[in-house]
Length: 108
Image (cartoon, rainbow, N blue to C red; front, top):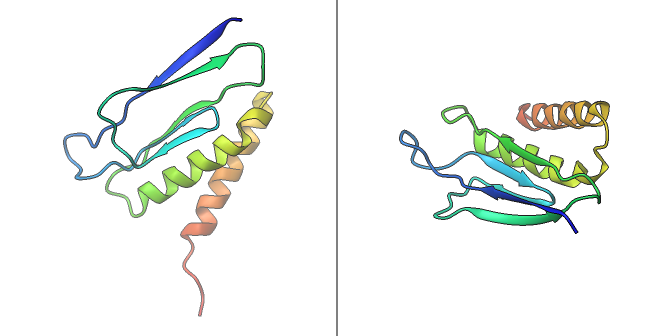
């Protein structure tokens, strides 16, 4: 059976003291974590689609790590259902709406 190997590596960078980026590899997420060595996953071809995405935490912006983790988890959950460009567009719009709701201050 043919397969694809996807590897990911994430680090703090040279400016920030922590990592705010998140990754999606199929159903697996890596959120706001630095890795010392590449993390690899093997996916068989011909099955459900395999989503691979990076959600940049935009270091320096408030709660960039929260937004990137929320986006990565949302996309990982939706990943196998994303069959068309329209499906991906709708999932990204849903991620955006979810982040916007989370960012709104609560009213008292």
